Length: 257
Length: 257
Image 1 (cartoon, rainbow over the protein chains, first blue to last red):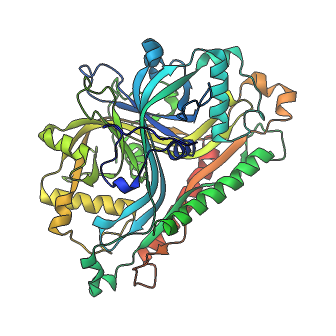
Image 2 (image 1 turned 135 degrees about the horizontal axis):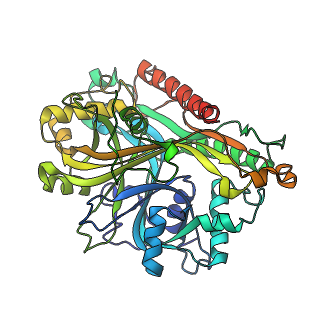
Image 3 (image 1 turned 135 degrees about the vertical axis):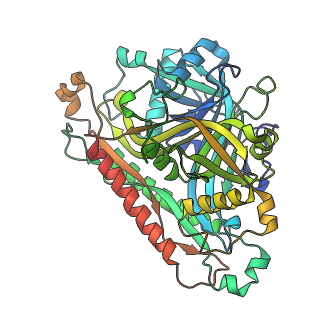
C-alpha cells in the first residue's frame, strides 16, 4: 500500500529523525505485528484528575469500507462496561482522543560506555479518535479481524458466530487516525571516536548486540480439550512466528550496519 | 518487601478483580522485568491539542534515599532536549502527571469460541509525578540503576563514569508514584458450559495455551569489538533470562489451572 501519514507538529519525530517512518506499510505492519497495544486517554476532565491513563488492549488495523486513501483504522475490543467503552460511547460518532503506542524490542546494543548503549526496536505512536462501532456487520467483521490478527485462522476454527449475549458484552472501538509515526532502529552499537581510540577501554569492554525475539512454545492442551492433534493453523502460525521473529532480530543487526 | 499501594478510585481494578494485585513486590517486579515502559503525558494544554501522547522509555524502579515506606520511584532516562524532559524541567520539583504502563505477554489461550479467548499476562499501570533529577549523586546512581536494570553488571564492565558532555545530554526523570496496580492472568482457557456440552463443538475445536516468552539469541560482536570472549555478565544474563522467561510462561499455565 503506497502513501504516508502527513507530517504534522504532533507526529514529526525530532530525535533521531533518520529512524522515522511515516509510510502506511511501515506503520500498519508494526501495529499488526504487536499482540498488545497500549492505549492512552483522559479518563475524566483534567481539572478533576490530572493523569492520563493507559489500558493494554488487543487490536488490529483494517478498513471496513476498503482503503480508499490507504490509511487504515485501528480496531480494539473490550468489555462493553469498561471505562474506555463507556467514555467513547458517551461521545457519539466523533469519538474520544486517544494515543496508541507499541514497541517491538529486537535487540540490546552494548557499547563501550553506557551512554552509547541503545536498542534495536520498531515502534509506532499514533493519535486518533475512538468511537464505538454500532453497525452489526462492521462489529462482526472487526471481531473476526482482531481474532485472526492474533492467530490467523482462529475464527473459522472456533464456534462462531458469537451468541447474542457474547455480542452484548463485547464492544469494539474504531480509532480513526489523526496522525501517526513509526521509528525503527537497526544495526550494531556505535561509539565515540575518543573511546574507540582508547586501547585500555577497547581492550577490556566487549561491544555487540544481544538479539531479542518473542518465542512461541509447544502448545499446551486445556484440561477440557478433546481434539488430540494440534490444528494446522496453530502449528503453521507457531512455525512462522518463531522463524520470522528470530530472523528479523538477527537481520536487523546486519541491515543497519 | 511488604506493603501495598493504597486502593483509590484511580487504581482500583474493576474488571476481573481476582487478577488484581497492589502489593509492592508484584508491582515492582513486573516493572523491573520490563525492558520498555510506555509513558503517557499531556504534551500541551488540552485546549490546544486534545491528545495525550505516549513515549516508549527505558526505566527501573528504586529508591535513592532507601525505602522507608517500601514504595519505590520509577527512574527513566532520555535526551535532555526531549519534549518530556523539557516539560518536566519547566514544572520544577512538583513534576508533571504521567501514567506508566507495561504488559508482559506470557501466552495466548484459545477457547472453543473467540469470545472466551484470552491471554496470560502480567501488567502494571501506575500514575505519578515526574520531575527531573537535579542532584549529581542521585543522577549517577539512577543511570547506574537503569543501565544494570537492562543487563546487570553492564555499568562496571563499561567505560564509566560518564563524561561531562554525556552527563549534560542525558537527563533522568524520577516518578514519584501516586497510585499503582498490577494485573496477572495465569492458567488455561475457560469455556461456557453450553459450549463444553456441545459434542459437535468439542469434537472439532482444539483448546489450549500457546506459551510466549522473550528469547535472547547468541550475542553478535560489533564491527569494532576487540574482546574475543563474550563477558561472563552477558553469558550469565542470557542464560538466566532464557531459563526464567520460558519457565514462567510454562508454569503460569499450570499455576492458574
